[in-house]
Amino acid sequence: MIKEIQAKSALHYHEQKFATNWDVNIYRGCEHGCVYCFARYSHRYLDNPDFFGDIYVKTNIVEQLDREFARKSWTHQPVNVGGVTDAYQQAEEKYGLMPEVIRTFIKHRNPLVIVTKSTLPLRDIGLISELAKLVQVDVLVSASVLDEKIRLVTEPNSSPTNDRINMLSSFREAGCRTGVLLMPVIPHLTDSYENLNGIYHLARENQVNMVLPGILHLRGATREPFMKMIRASFPEIYPEISKIYSTGNAAETYKNSLRPLIRRLQSEYGPWAKYTPPEPMPEKLKEQQLKLF
Ligand code: SF4
Image (cartoon, rainbow, N blue to C red; front, side, top):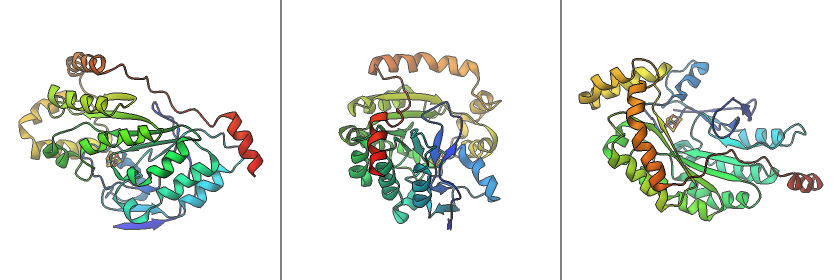
């Protein structure tokens, strides 16, 4: 069920190891339904356990973001749309908030990071390209499974992995930096040479700037539904997965066994750029922008 709500604030700061510390989330909850989703915790604050089914839409997000970008104290740091949930999930097809959100980024010349499991960003490529002419824009897809049968169980409402990675060449041509977040690699399910090599191959074909691999974590509320899914759909690997995840992190012995393959693929298909967050808006543009207001 979709519920419309009003955002009290748009920009949120979270200390992150990756991309940028600032995000704006248009939706709470996410229809992609990834069984390993770590963002489920965010529905606790709404007292609602149905993270995949009850989607909250912040219908005033554009006005709120515009106000916050206009503050003198805002330093034009890069902002990730969908730091918690995917901004290009199914509800976006109906609400179409992203085009106005991107226009707000263009108005304030603010660097943007998009992380998605959908091909819907192609709808907005014209606007994204316009922004990329002014400031840095990163379009990153999270993609870790080529086998459609497995994808439909583990992340049922995402776009097919091939399509997601293939769309990155259009964004590269549009002036964006592009990347594949090859995560989560799931032991004994998506860690085969065939699967990982296939993803690196697609990444190179689409000339992405970086591939960042990462192994599945099973922390907090993620663990129970994930293990339930493994038991129901892939019972043959259940005992091994239970051993590897006796804690929220994969066992070191497993990580050590996977590292040589990842290193080999990284060097075979690389070199990849080391991921560095987009630069804040350049000083020159800030001066130009001040003259506009
Ligand atoms: S796309 Fe991200 S936020 Fe959405 S369900 Fe999947 S892991 Fe969770």
